[in-house]
Length: 606
Ligand SMILES: C[S@@+](CC[C@H](N)C(=O)[O-])C[C@H]1O[C@@H](n2cnc3c(N)ncnc32)[C@H](O)[C@@H]1O
Image 1 (cartoon, rainbow, N blue to C red):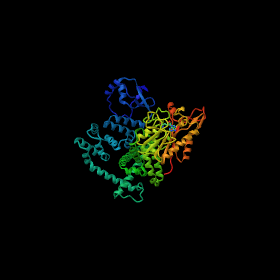
Image 2: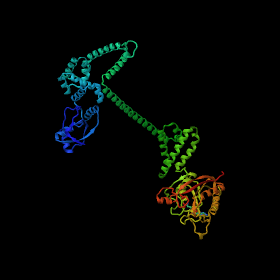
Image 3: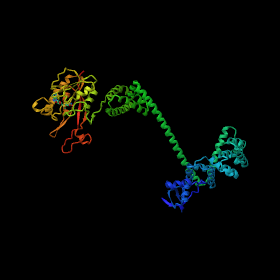
Image 4: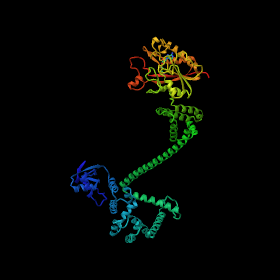
């Protein structure tokens, strides 16, 4: 806001005695006034808190109004801020400081109050005030920096007891340009004498007033401890008298100030504590990092770590770091695009393992081998959950344009989990050859059959898989992706092939599939798996539960049901770019089927 310049008055607490306005004038002429004056409102005028040099300059330049920022502050704050604002900008001269302190002292403030209010050492305030006890020539010498305030401080004791002596020493100090040390030595005998006299006076006072100490017996001043006790008592007494000498307002102000100081002290303490805590955390982190590096180098430790032993003993930060290190080691073996998922899985599993081990530490030995196996699988990229979501089909295997193809990722999951390198996998309904290509990539052998292989896939053997030309107990895994009954026709009607997609009814389809499964069971080695990728469907408004019926049928053949994973379907959904699972609009009573099942069936025996 703008106010008439004549309404702005300088602060009565301005310590500055001289103002240099020259350079500021140039600056204002060039750039204008960059910051508003800070004032507080008085009855009929504004009192300046900050900006006296600017105010003077504006007046010299003939400005009629000035921009001001009006603050609401009490006298004490006004006094303090005027002093502080100026001292941070430029040091006051000794004379400015001394006169300012004297003004406050003349208003009734004690040196220690001035010290507290301005947050400066009160002996320093006292030394400035003492200057006024000297004759003018010595005062001039102080203002001219020929005699320092520190020297005056050395003379403090003497000033109080014998001002004549202090004047004489000060004169000598000026004339002989004495150092502070020399002044100190010069007045030492007097100071010692004064101190002795003080002690004597104190002793007498204490003897006369033993209750000050709360002591039952008369006081004696012989041992150092006696003196310490006496000093404490005197300090207490000094404090009490100081308080008594204050008016109620001053007392309230002092209390408020103490409270403020206590708050600030507490804040400083908390800050320091915070810093210490930060340093401690850093230390833990450094240590953890060091340890993590060792762990990565040392396989034995990795084993222990996986077993949870370190987690049980280490603090959280350390466990985190170790986990990170181990994770990096695991991740190094996983293809880039699978890392995030593998990391999530590992994290989830690790957390639950950690919890279990914390609750049942004695179980850690039992869990360890399982966890090692789990780690191995995660390292391969296996998803150990029942929901699989591959929004994009990897294109390195099979043919994405083959109607009814599957994503290579599904085959990957099955062979990573259930076979080792060099194992033999059979796909009795190979289609465009996805399983064959995936197996080849991951060093598994694979034989693929199909009732009508694509002509370009010479590696797929034409075969009706109602019969599979392989020996019993021969293969390590079967991956089979049958037609979903009539969803897609894989052969033409006139070809009259025993194509499952051409079965007349679901029952006939299941009957045909049963024969194929029997063959699969026969060729599988004992306890080996058959993975079946299949989907339910809706035909003529009716739900056809192919998956459930297939699982029941397989069980009857002797397969042990190991459950299934749900593979989310993205066809239409991804085209709409609207999320993963959607329900068919309410014009039918059925939900839209947006997943397939990957069923795990294990041959018994062994
Ligand atoms: C869903 S597709 C398999 C697709 C394959 N997984 C891929 O990614 O290309 C089903 C396949 O089963 C074949 N099929 C149907 N009846 C068969 C039978 N009796 N013997 C062998 N293959 C059969 C079809 O020709 C078709 O290629």
